[in-house]
Length: 588
Picture (tube, rainbow, N blue to C red):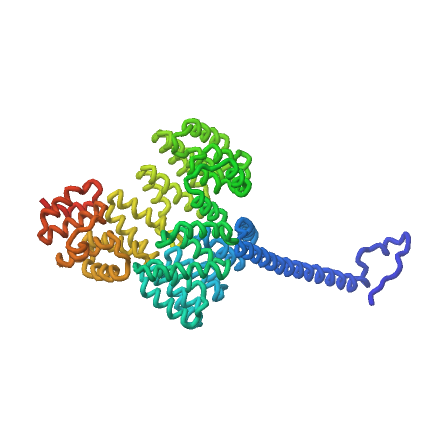
């Protein structure tokens, strides 16, 4: 034990802070103190780490439970909190995939994909990933995961269902039906498969099969109030199912209104179908405001569609915009409605709101909305100026936000007939090529703009990139094949691919004309004619000028010169690509 002499009053030597006989004792004390502090620090770090993990798990559980019980606002709010506080946690990614799967499937897909790449995904996660991949047209990724799941659990009905669903989405209805039959032989109560089979039956031409499908949908609804029953109700109410009596449809709509998992927007849609075109009474309006007043983005659009613009406008205020900036889009959507009723006054109010909203909403959004307002006012010069300002403002955004905004800017400028601006925006958006995480709709828009600009070489290069990112997407495969055939690029191989696509894909007009062009380029005019004709007649399904050009060339090559000339004269040649125009050169 260390101890020292008592301090003697007045003796300076006794006041020496480090006396020779105390050095060992004080060293020990310092070592003990440092070790204690280090241990406390490590303990604090471990506790914080465990607490963070525990908190993320708790929040994730709350978000998923809220979603599963139909409390969607709470689910989304909790999911946002998770992303803000625990962006890198597996539980955050898992919850995001589940909560956003119906609201924002592509974001949900990206979250589950990241979870998979982190090697944190279990079998349930992989099944959700596969289903989301199917929903966002990444079916090649879904197929790989489904194959792996089936290797591990070949008899699991959830895995087998994914394979059947893929067949359905690939327009292979009979194959999908046979798969559902096989699944239900071993698992007769598997509700997702029963729903898919019922849906397939309702699409059959035979009345008996359609009635069987309708009956099964009703049984699924009556058995349990779950997501399968809700999907069954949606099919019954909104898929134009025949036969379905008016009384049956109304009963179905009422069931949707009362279903615990139906979203507010779906309930409002069902109410609108039930209400029909009847005038909205003050009592009904009051009831709707009490029920949906806190969701002006839903109720305002519903009221505006029914001409109640004044009531829709009254749902908003600048205070709400300050608290929720995204509401300005819905508010201005009401004010810029193209109904002639008080339109000038509404446009003036929209202008005032946009000026007052400066600093409340992101500047790039405000500029974009100003552009749309000028379009509605009939002022194209001011519209273009605001589009340009919004484009410039986008440079200050983060990479992720900029890409999302440029997609919106390109879409709005394109529908506003500003092709030149849309082209520059998309060139900036895809300056580094088409990445893995780009939605198909954005890729398709990029391709369409290049075609509208008649830049065939550029369109071909874009089509190749899109097909690489979405190799199982029929439209992407068809677009690439069509341009390769137009430019006479690798005709033999491309023609073979088109023959395969004709078997796998849907028999839509643009696919049939690609098949006809493939056969024409291969020196098979008679087979080309068979691709476009129906009972020796050219059906009136070919409305696009490019499709008509291929049909005219095919008719001409088969000696049907009068019909070919008639069709060629109906084509607006200014809409054609140079290679499509060349197809018409012999027709005189």
